[in-house]
Image (cartoon, rainbow, N blue to C red; front, side, top):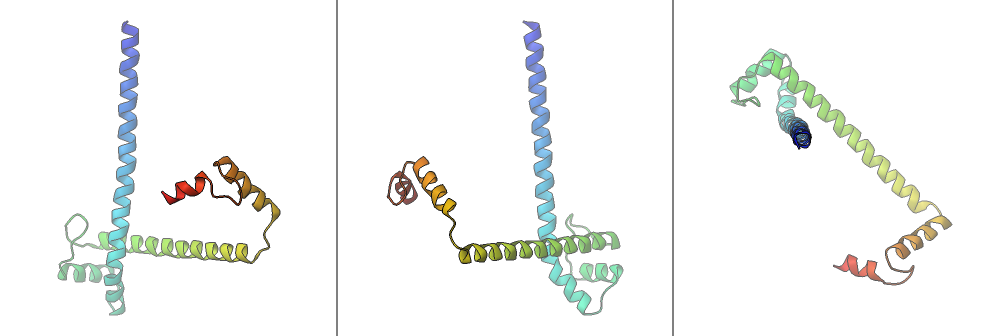
Length: 149
C-alpha cells in the first residue's frame, strides 16, 4: 500500500511540475505578444521622432520622457530601454514583411490552382471525402445538413 501511495505522490508531483512548465510557456508567449504589440504601437512615434532628426538613443529617450510615455514597467526611458524598443520594432517589421510575403505566396498559389486544369485525382478525392462523411458526390446528404446547422 505504501508503494502505491509513493507512486501516486510522484505522479502528482510530475503533474504539478508539468502544469508549472506549461504556465511558464504561456506566460512567456503572452508577455512576448504584449511587448510586440507595445512596440508596434510606439513604432509610429519613434518614426516621427527619427523623421524630425531625433536619432540618438539618448535623444529618443528624452523625448519619450518629455511626452510622458511610460515604459512597459511604468518607468523612465533610458538608452537601454530605447535600444530594446528599436530591436522589437525591427522584429515586428521583419515579421510583417514575412507575413506579407506569406500572403503573397498564398495568393499566387490560389491563382495557380484556379488557372490549372482540374486533375482527375481531385474529383476522386472529393468523392471519397463525401462518401466518408455520409454523402455521395453530387448529392445533398448529411454533410450538407451539417453545414446548414
